[in-house]
Image 1 (tube, one colour):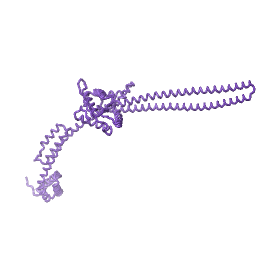
Image 2: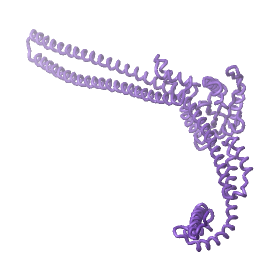
Image 3: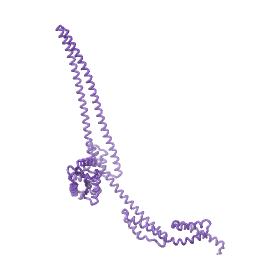
Length: 504
């Protein structure tokens, strides 16, 4: 192997320097941002080694940079330690979130325990550990999303059940009306589906069907009311026309009567003149007889016209009477229908108790009345404990039966003047008329104990059903809404303190 010439050796050295320059430039880009104190020096070296290299100046800067790098190694270590501490703190916070799966929490604890920087790999140590930490965060988020999804599903189910119960209450009056009329309509089909249970899509379809039916029923009622009003208008028009016709005939008859009276007066005057101017008795008799016959004819004609007019008047009055009787009958039927519709609208179809609408009407009346008369009135809210569990475990039909038994029992234990209504779902409201809050509290306590002793049996299993109650003095608040909210807070307190409690 021949020895290289000095020129060749110089070219090789230059090539190696170029490679080294590229390496140093790449190294400068790699470490850019790691430490602001050495960024400028690295960029200057990169510039000096690019294009036409200036190795002398680059060597000068590298001497100072080398000293700085020794100092900056401690900065890198501190930065690594800070990064690891941040990772540790963030993971610890994630592990304290209840929704995070227990397996992930265990992995996080193990990771934190083993989170120690690698002294031989000071730069890359945080990167590897950050990657592991990131994978744990992704797991935690994934499990949290699942937990949130489950919570959302539970919330949707609760809303689904609530809409189902509201739809049942809304459809009941129409269902009753349809059965009474013997119609096999969509309303009966919806009622059956609601009892059997529906999915979200089917429930929405039932809601749409119900909305259409209500609009149709409203239009039918509007049409019936319009028809009745139109008939009343037509009958009144006919009656008015008959009255006007009678008045006109009466005026005409009066005019004819005046003319007859005038004619009779003329005949009497003529007869008097004839009597005074006649000397012969025979002529007097004849002329008197003629005048009397004319008078008799006039009187008979008047009587006939009067009798005819009276008969027409009686016929007209009889016709008017029949029309009025027909209108009264229709109006009475419509009134009874409105009364029945109002009763249905104010009654809960399942429990037969007054519903929320009836309660809101009654509460305003009683509040104003008792406030004006300085009386005593108290408001209670009753809620069946764990009612959702009964529906989920035994079915909605068992839940409905429970509500019916409960409503009957509540009515039985309250006084005759007290008012109880179904607020919605498993909640009831009661307006109590007692001497003081203690009396109402004692009454409700007896009711609560009695309900807890009821022998409920579901599918062969003995089940204890209890209620939580909140009761307030209604007149202690500025309005009925404030009183209701106060009673509701007490009910919530009863639930929080173990249920099956009456709070005042």
